[in-house]
Length: 433
Ligand SMILES: CC(=O)N[C@H]1[C@@H](OP(=O)(O)OP(=O)(O)OC[C@H]2O[C@@H](n3ccc(=O)[nH]c3=O)[C@H](O)[C@@H]2O)O[C@H](CO)[C@@H](O)[C@@H]1O
Ligand SMILES: C=C(OP(=O)(O)O)C(=O)O
Image (tube, rainbow, N blue to C red):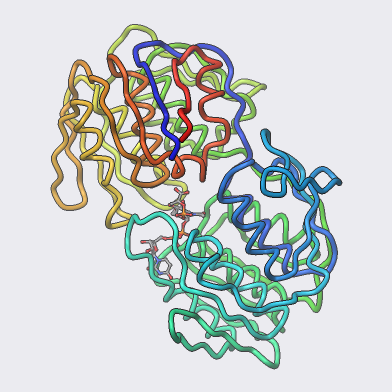
């Protein structure tokens, strides 16, 4: 199993290119199931989750080509940088998404929306993904039922049927859900009549998916607000759409610079995608400057100021940056309180950060972080995607050597992490085996 070895203590300086967003690429790829024509996606990051979803889509009959040319090396796609991929679901050959494929990743459950809408039936295993909470699928079931689907949950599978096509309806999410908003927006695009989704997620990834569906011929208004209206159409066509830059990767590297000090241009980053997080990073004492090329992050010798944060749905501070921010706060000059409101079990990094010398206590859903003047490198274990990268950030600032084990978590969501950081002066390498 691969490990990441870091020797901390160097400030970061240089340029880090921001990749396409994993959490936008995944629903856009799934939207390819809605049409027999080709959906071309630009700026798709090269990540384990993307490769896994390519396998899941392949099981349904989706063909793909990378930059117009199929490459059978590296598990089917060219390795390295964000790329353009064409997805064509001429026929859906299988309406079942099996446990073996879906259990590895949360977003794979989302195929239920387009497969059901296009084929009138779908049987999808209950999902896996980061173990950061119970993560039920009740809102997907309730929402699809509101669109007229018959749904049973049987032997670990959600079996959905809508033999006479889904019907538009009004559905109010009892709780904001990014995934359920994606799924209902896709399903409603091919339903008969109008659907109104209330209390919908407002995340930029929802907006990116709506732009994609609109380019495919869907009639959608209001994406990015809490009320989305979808007028169903009989069929959707192919389109060409660009995946937005990864706001979580952007925030992660910004926090790394805020922690180690230095001066880094996050190339291609879009400030409007993460204003709440950038405001918080500014309050810690880092300088954040939007430029034509992206976002410049600088911190000089001054210390890190403690800042309290509470995670919230967009436009609030994202839960996917909570662990990284806690990493940063471990070396703040004073006490900060970090409250997690989205997932009930997203503090697994606390005990690992403690191995590096962090002082953190938990009180319910709040972590109280007493900043220390220095961290010391140690072996640590990655427990989930964003927790892993918080350990990398802390390792970059710690004295001596940190080894992060179970790197496969990182590979789900960070493209060329070691290369991007070592390009800015960090001592970081992957140890294979
Ligand atoms: C691939 C992807 O894009 N993943 C992101 C997506 O996950 P995901 O779409 O799974 O997250 P949701 O927004 O659905 O989850 C928000 C909350 O709603 C709950 N819930 C959700 C659905 C449901 O049927 N019932 C229910 O109770 C969840 O357990 C959680 O407590 O949004 C999360 C919140 O921004 C991010 O942390 C994840 O990185
Ligand atoms: C929690 C995440 O992913 P997933 O929803 O796929 O588990 C994430 O991207 O931080």
